Length: 358
Image (cartoon, rainbow, N blue to C red):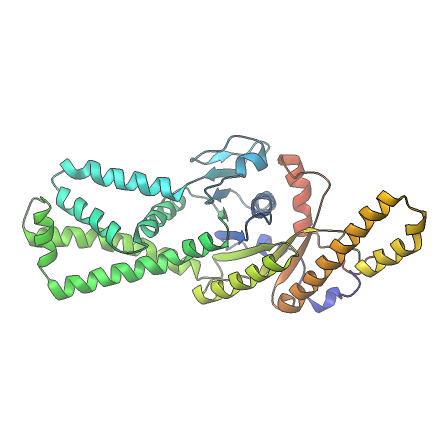
């Protein structure tokens, strides 16, 4: 694209992520249908070249990792065919929440059933805390798996922003519960006793607070990791269309509010990223009279699409070119499915497109 000078912008590749060995969490997100799963898989493939153990986790209820790798992937880490150090898993936060609530119900016959039932009441009474606690269970599970780096293939933007806000939601909620404990003292223990707990109200209060404090510590640890650019980064994915660019701007602003590092934007489905619409337009003007009618119509639509894409790519570089690595990924004439095609396509994340190539 001749209007851009490579020297004006940051390196248009994800080499910065590959080279940052301290990274433990990489979130990949954006609007629905922009290629988040393909980008996540390609990034995982590239990370596997330099890391000992890489895990790709899908948190989108509409899982696509199995389709991308053309193999069955479940709720447990599944080794990817053709790799010795790359695994993937598909998880559903709502299923995890249901499982967590079932385990609470099953504890009803235990001697500490009063505490368990009060915990169940708490998880249903504070808005958002049910999903947040489910998220804490997910993070606990992922942290226990011992991987060098975890790539999260997230749900569309709105769900992702909720996911990333859970640590803050839960921290505030548990903070309120702790305040209540300080203000009302033994009432919480007496409430536990009303739910059928064994032991004195004081013991019940200490037990309940112990559980909440344990959850709070996990959330604080996750929150600190999320806000540490040495450990966590977010890759925004979009396509060169108005709604997608707008959604990316919203996502970048929200990530900034949460204190989460983001300095990479992947633009997928780009028509001839190394070419300029004006350059292609000149060729079309010079040759259209010699083309059949159908070919002229096809080329005309292609040129209209190319001009529209160049307009939004230009806006993307204007908005982010100084502070973000903007990576242009080409639109292909085949689907990127299976390990070999993912390996091949992933090279585009590392080898930047020459914007001045003619």
